[in-house]
Length: 113
Length: 113
Image 1 (cartoon, rainbow over the protein chains, first blue to last red):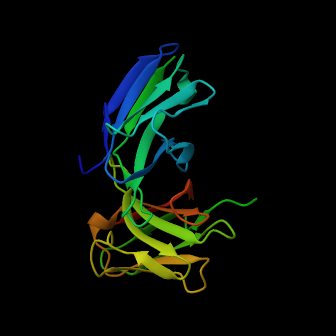
Image 2 (image 1 turned 180 degrees about the vertical axis):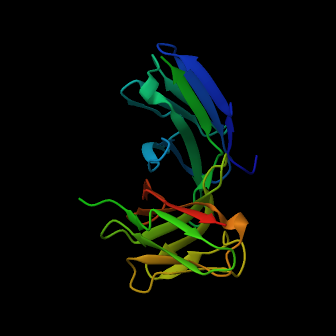
């Protein structure tokens, strides 16, 4: 793939549900994969920057995994809370991108109380 | 310390007018990025500065858009002869040298009537 793709586009879950979404990115010349969380009316907030194949990072109830050989990353949220409602964006930085991130369109998560 | 700031937070203008949007990055960050986000879309890359120079301006949609960063700190995005399609949230981000985590400002919401 040439672009960064995220799925699903949107997701509605109940409070307490665990959920996950996918980011697919170009695997050739890969350097780093970024995950950001963007709440309405706020600035995007960095969650993780991942570089190594097989890497797994965790921040509270949110974790992410990375497969650089096949070009995908999963973001997991355990026990979703209403305050997790936001758009989750991933972005890829590859060699030759001139230090420019290529962004996905995001997954919009709504957690119902 | 202080984060990335952007002014104004909101701007309403009429079609055909000229607007300037300002970004103050985190002190010491050499890399500065401008993005545009339209409704339902992810961030769209516009331009990236490394120091005072534009390292990549391939995202500027046309010659009505121009950005400067004369002293390697504050940057101004300038839009001439605004069109209704320019209405969007304009985001600025900075990072220490480029490619690492980007720190976003709150954005400027531009509405062209």
